[in-house]
Length: 129
Image 1: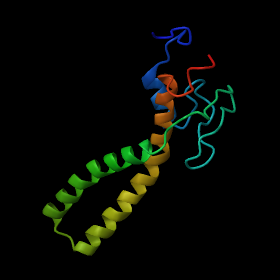
Image 2 (image 1 turned 90 degrees about the horizontal axis):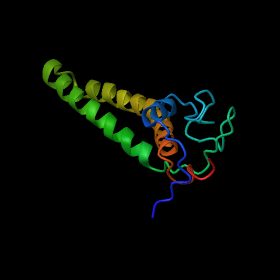
Image 3 (image 1 turned 45 degrees about the horizontal axis):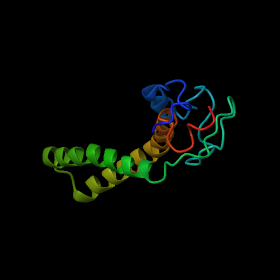
Image 4 (image 1 turned 120 degrees about the vertical axis):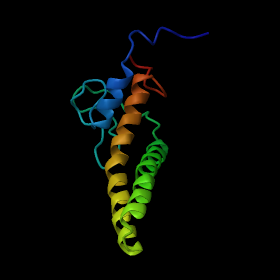
């Protein structure tokens, strides 16, 4: 039996994911969701929405590896076949690119996952509405 008393209104999924990706609270859209590089706030500083029950865990890391690998592997192949640079130069450029892209994506994907969990009322996000 499904308890529908806690699902009074639908939360939009894609806007919540995009707000989380931008580092904003999926509820109000203005408060920050992260208080450090990867530390999720216990609650929003603007609307007081609680985030302490999020379960992002390893999801952002897996998505980051997936995206960076799928972007950089074809670029590495194209650069090697077309330009034939020295292997050390190729390694250096792509190592820096992979690290930079990973560092850029990781907190954004963590915010997106927390936004998705909030929108779908996963974990404890559906219990206080």
